[in-house]
Image (cartoon, rainbow, N blue to C red):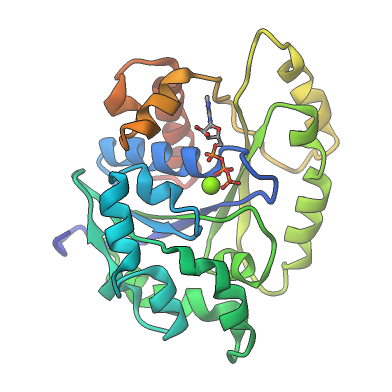
Length: 268
Ligand SMILES: Nc1ncnc2c1ncn2[C@@H]1O[C@H](COP(=O)(O)OP(=O)(O)OP(=O)(O)O)[C@@H](O)[C@H]1O
Ligand SMILES: [Mg+2]
């Protein structure tokens, strides 16, 4: 992406929840795509060895080719490099990506012996932020709570917590908040909101959502819920955002509304 005249403050948002399959990667990819349609410049950082964020924009062959190259997030973090050098363009206007690799599975181990090991990613991202060419940096986190996820949180201004509308989706939320609270001294990342995902109206369970979340009065819950939508899986199979796969499908419209909530939150 060219460094145009529209320089400004870059907001960094990460998507975390140690519960696997809660919709982190799906939300990150589709929210980012909608932000780009709204004219925002977006840099995705694929922080997970599962490569799901990368697979949302490139087909499997291309993702594996990138993962095997020298230009991955893992290499940048391991050698404490400026992430500007690791950015690839995607086929979409306004969207760039720092690809992941399966080697991310050992990043906790590599970080362990580094000085100021919680701040390595933050420092790698500083050059990109200083250039101010992106409106948003969106980081997809893995379903863990180790030193790497602490790095992701320390590099972020905001956290979005996608949770699945199911009993086990809610279980553990308190631990997640405790974990984030415990990092208060280390990171200024603020919880932008909890996002309820995979809502299935046939199950009715989601109706208890608001009651369950009342226990956490100070936590914002996005008004937009993301419903179960089979188009999401077809889109992921085709390595495209859901709105590209099927423009007006329910979840595409919901991600658009979520993007509006996110931009309003930051006053953009
Ligand atoms: N709204 C939805 N409707 C239907 N399927 C969905 C929806 N959201 C996510 N999925 C599916 O649920 C699965 C988990 O979603 P996703 O990979 O985004 O979660 P995750 O939190 O990133 O998982 P992980 O913890 O493994 O990183 C995927 O197979 C995805 O296709
Ligand atoms: Mg994921």
